[in-house]
Image (cartoon, rainbow, N blue to C red; front, side, top):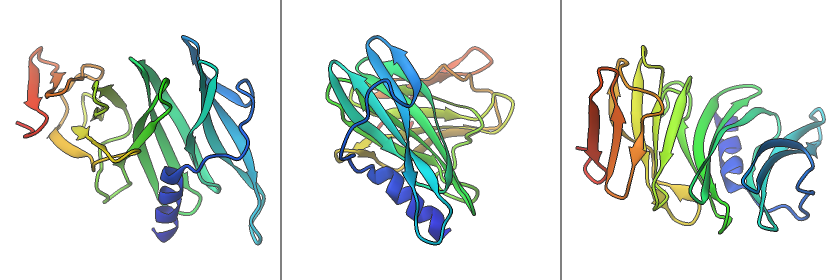
Length: 213
């Protein structure tokens, strides 16, 4: 897993690019409300390896452009689930190493302040955290915290909470509940104090962010 660990650190570091590509270059992933998100392929060729490229995700809004995420070369990468919540664009990423391992992250980027936060929700089999990533929905609080619900309604599911930490990251994902199905995807709600979700039997569960109860 040493290679994957290195890839994970590089992806989270997301160093700024020296020269920003035009806003309409690359593959457009999102274009709504004056905000554009696009995937720019950057070539990479290390000695002893075949030429490849890595993904750079940029956003443009209000006459500004900024780097949201920079993946690593020699991986399969997806940036998806983009959804606007107030001034933030939430998203999911999934990365699979050519040789081993994979991980899934949740994050958001602020379309006004241009700050991005990213946190892991699934670091592969036997890893921690391991929120089921075959289906994931999320909710974003006004203070930047994120709740995620992973897993299909008829399979194992978890709800987890990620609190802002530092300028760019989150605390480790903290599981609020886990169950063998019965939670409704898309029902998550989060505010400064509580996280709630619906169950398929029609009831709604609310827990305190601080205690998880």
